[in-house]
Each structure stands twice: as C-alpha cells, then as structure tokens.
Length: 152
Image (cartoon, rainbow, N blue to C red; front, side, top):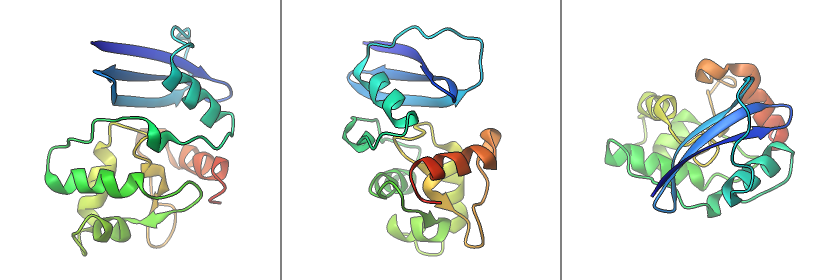
C-alpha cells in the first residue's frame, strides 16, 4: 500500500512524504505553501512535526527505503543515518564513511539526489570550508536545520 501524506510544520510550511509497505520512500521538506494539512494523525507525521518543533526525536528509528541507484549511494545513506543529531561531517568524510575516501564530489552528488530529507540528513553534510549548499531550499534553510539540532 502506498500513501502520500502532507503535513504542516509550524513555522516551516508544508512537507510531504510517501510511505510504501511501511517504509518512507520519499520526503519533501516543508516549505511555505497554501496547501492544507491532510494527514496529521500518522505516527511518522507526528515525529516530523515534533522534530520541527525542536524536540529531539529519533528519525533513525523510522523504516526507510535505502535502495539507491548505486551501492555507493546506498552506503552514503547508511553512513549518514548514523551521524548523530547535532553533529556534521564534510563531503569527504561522508565519502570515507561510505568506503570511498577521496570521493567527496560523488558524496555531494548523493546529497543533491537525496529523496529522504531528514531521514537521511544531508543537511548534516558540510563543505570543508563552510556550510556548503542546500539545493533549492537554500543555505538559510540548512543553517536553520543545523541550529534546530544544536550543530551551530
């Protein structure tokens, strides 16, 4: 069974996730939107709302689909889920954790294609000389997530 859920995170906007066979397979981080909240009673939605409210929730306990395009991307996802809240790694460190030291650019490509925002927390990956980028959501959004987690 596949369910698409929209949720409102106070102060952040509306996010969406897709759950298939008990696993999160896709998550879009909240952004400002006119869309109404539709599924506020799902346990995963409740965890996400608690996260965005600043609570220290364990999103790593939520089952997610970690099958990616390549074994390296899958290893990046697994390694990144192990990075604790409040900590960051560089793209080079993520590559090394995924078994490919020196593949920082490939780790960056993985983060750019990540479809499981927060569950595979690419906002915790920073550039060697600063925060790096954060796609269409922008650097301010990444900074806000890291501040929420106490990493900045």
